[in-house]
Length: 262
Ligand code: 5RP
Image (cartoon, rainbow, N blue to C red; front, top):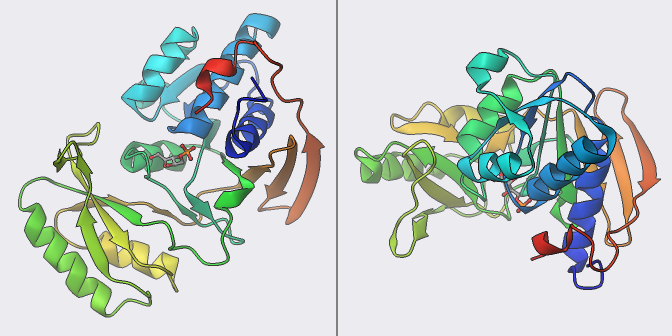
């Protein structure tokens, strides 16, 4: 129910619901991961039921795949899809240049592959994710389990020369054990405080042996749809350099969206 949804949830819902309108019949769509993406999957399921919308989707995680199946969304692999028309995904931070930090949910590798294999990427987020400079949110880096401590050390050495505020690297844990991604890898969270040069950092991190991918998305996002708790949304288009406003009706008490509220 919208009364029971937190302000952040209402904002996420608004952004996700607006983004769902960009999906057209016959499209091949990448579906992101996380709580905002979950609202998107629900909205797309509703469009299928209400409007007969038909599209095929590539999920970016097992979690999203499971939810999409429950919604009756047709899933294909990226190999089967070949290329995607559109990917819609959440973010942990976004800045004015459409740079992102992603991977809070641990799905950054598939998310980056899927977004990079798409004509267009739309990011959906509550406005609280907007930052002047990326880096307050710890930057996730996916690493191969073999020798991960050596990889961590190499990352720490690399950070000494990087334009960042903090340099602490922490392995992500789940129940006291290393968090394992859908690809069987580990995540190191880099507590950087502020990232001066995201593009450069993304490149140097990916050159370290053992690093599979990092959560900096540079030159990938085409549009940000930022949601507000009152249902307002702001659509920012990178190519047009323009921003447009819209209003989304929030879910009514007792409707089918209430179970996703945090
Ligand atoms: C998962 C992600 C998510 O998109 C990101 O963590 C945002 O999550 P949420 O929508 O729950 O705030 O990158 O790997």
